Length: 575
DNA sequence: GCCGTTTTCGGCCCGACTGTTTTCAGTCG
Image (cartoon, rainbow, N blue to C red; front, side, top):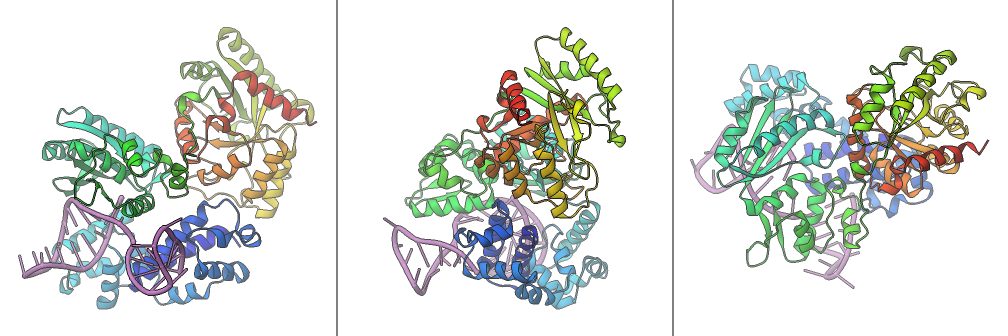
């Protein structure tokens, strides 16, 4: 049984309970349990066999029992029963903005509306107007919302959102009415996928700033506009919230809107126990006066905590660590020394070796690892032996011309169906390093795929396992693989695991990084660049690495060129 | 449904905005 299946079921139960009108805290328990399970590194079988499941905070007797039932039978009676009491379409209807469980319930019970299509029809017949709490505007907004759901999946890559958000923040900072402005929300927490953009600002004349913001050229539609909060939709379809408070409240607002929701809940509960009340306006004592805090650091200090970096604020152990002064010193972009996994025009890249190496020099790298595709990768112009020799000659010439950077000759070798690498032994030994990746036969079963990749890890020529799950965010599901076994094999054989920094991949997922780190597996943050601009994707990889609690010491390419070479050599001595 | 250095029962974060309302419910983050 797959852990992701029970995670989906628990999340869905949470929604169904809301629809049913159950105690909201009960619903929260289920979504919490799903989130906690998602962040646990072990697979379902291990969690149950080692009895670790019952030690997880937030999973109690009742939910634990349900997980056991699902693991043993592949079914969950409670879920089946709950699910069958509502038409499937109701869950879809919840994707419409500003339409929540309460109103969906009314629509279902009073009008018999069971799906988005039926809802649209009911709107056109003005049937919503007869319902209590609904009026002309609600009906219009629901129609607009349906249109929005139809047009977009309502999810965006962090790179797309970051691009838009940075433009807006720069515009705000450029105004003399604005004291502070920053990205907040899940984008600041460096989530790989975001639903919207949150921006916070401080000003003494918020109305003027709101006008400036709402009239920005990237704004397509104003959905909400108040004195301290506005919500707009951009031309690219992303929704943006802007909140503005006076300067003295700014750090509280920034913290509040950075979230996550669960982090805020936990922190406010902590404040409450200390006799304080926390909101976006301040941290208030019993006398109703706010404690002055100049920045987020002072807010955490007031709560007896070390400063928690935004990336860690998921209520996944960061508050406990901050209390015990054991937060990691997170990796920063300037700590990366080398850029590994770079494609050139020899295979499917668009820039020459020299152009890519020059780009790496300009980014301040002290070494670069060129790795074009291997011979079986026909779709990507993979290199046969003759083409390799041509490429090596060219690399030698570029190396002479640019002595300030060390160039490693590598390859991104396909992992063949049987787990072998894509060249004979005599060629494999000529590479400085090898990134081994799965690029074909994605639909293997979990057992076969796991075996295939472990075979590749066992190969002493493999330096780094590339994009370990093959997922494409918002595009393609990861292939079936037992990551726990893969990580164990990597740890056993001293193979590094890639954190592919391409914003469509960000693979290995951050939820597994903390575990990999604990197992002592070096993580290599690689741009997988196919063009000069792709080199800069490392920034997204660093964001995810930080989210996964990684420090410089956990990352392979923070080491200098000599240490990187030694790592590759040590691996090969296993032959 | 979960949890406990106030508690094994009774709590569970807090506020903005909208649309429908004459004071508030629903939704969102």
